[in-house]
Image (cartoon, rainbow, N blue to C red; front, side, top):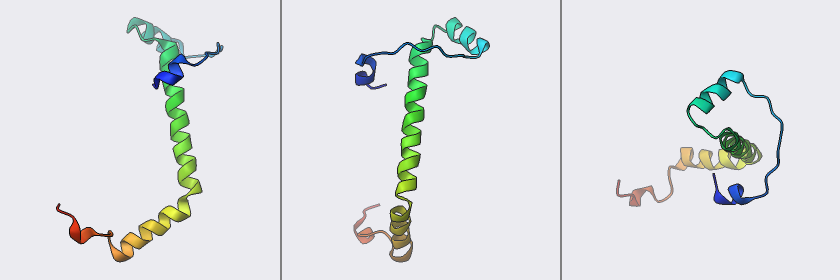
Length: 80
């Protein structure tokens, strides 16, 4: 998790988590708050990526179509 997130102000929330997950996390000395925070940050990043891909779907398809039709630009100069 980025340090800026860890240093930002925190908000206390009441959430429900499966009892077995809590017991397993405690047995493994996992910080549940930090683990939840990391999971939420990952979910946000994944959703932002999905939204960006959706918003740019036409441009991405256009670029892919160009490569399918003409190949990679400057491919003849690749050393591998």
